[in-house]
Amino acid sequence: MPTLGEFTARQLRGLCEVAGLGEQDARTYQDVLVEALGPEAGRRLDLPPSGRTFLSDDHTPVEYSLSFRPDGAPDLRVLLEPGCGTATLEENGRAGLDAVRAMSRRWGFSTAWLDKVEDLFLPASPQGPLALWCALELRPGGVPRVKVYLNPAARGPARAAETLREALDRLGLTRAFAALPPGDGYPFLALDLGDWEQPRVKVYVRHPALSAAEAGELSRTADGPTAAELRDFAATAAGTAAGDARLSGLPVLSCHVFTDTAADRPSGFTLHIPVRDYARHDGEALDRAVALLGRHGMDPAPLLRALPSLTGRRPQDGVGLIAYLALAHQRGRPPRITVYLSAEAYSVRPPTG
Image 1 (cartoon, rainbow, N blue to C red):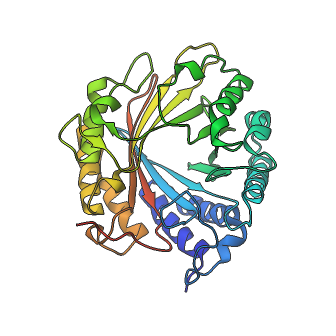
Image 2 (image 1 turned 90 degrees about the vertical axis):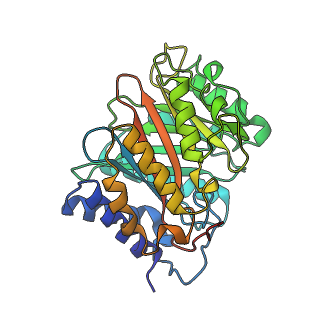
Image 3 (image 1 turned 120 degrees about the horizontal axis):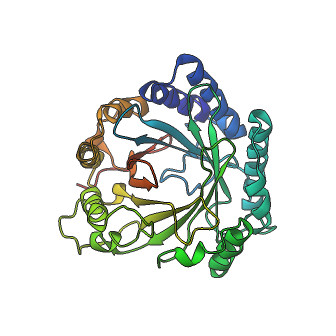
């Protein structure tokens, strides 16, 4: 019986090949993944997960994503919870913080942004479904780009907006909070750390029972995407032809990217559709992903090669392998589509029809 580390390292190796990363890079990133998971990496998969992580439906503390653009191989990212398996949320956050600081020493990047807001998101008695997640964008050379995901409700749901506003102010983004669209809470604040061309602060907003038509109005960027483009993406990803049909399952997420402290609006926007809650099985989710990639001039072949790297099951035999479909716009760059992929180390959600 494989361990969690062995299982996810094998998956990652296959995805590295899909993303055009070489053999040495794949081995390096396998080691990085296992090291970041800590003691949990050695846990056998015939045992239940030791914690109920919010990161995935089956509580695997790892998620993958492939970010597609019109030309070139997709970018590969792995999201993980370094503190998985700890006894308390406070210990979880501290383990995550220790892991990020170890990465900063290893790869020589600054954690200044995280340092400025650490007390807001890692208090003595944190609340909420997560403490700290870490995402690694894997690139040639064996040195990833790193970002962290933090929980604005760490000091309590009633203080989430206050916490987020204070964090943005400390980061010099004093006009950012006012630029956000209305929603039902703020599930994540994400910070780019280290070697990014243009480091980003990303604010996520939750939108339950949204329609595709309403999704078209969420962007606050100055130069795109258009409302029609967002409506089309949301309707196709969710499998609803009617623009006013409500998405009553898992909520849509919008992500607002800030890179300029002087700006009064975001420089980027991403619309996240939780396709796994709006498809009967992964065959349907895959068909929608392929259609959207083709519509935006992106090659779906890497996605088709990626799925066998994760599982031996047929897409029709479960739902949730494809977790989210997202359309991203960043000022000065072509649009991207990101497909989020579950590890399914512990269980597979059965199809609904």
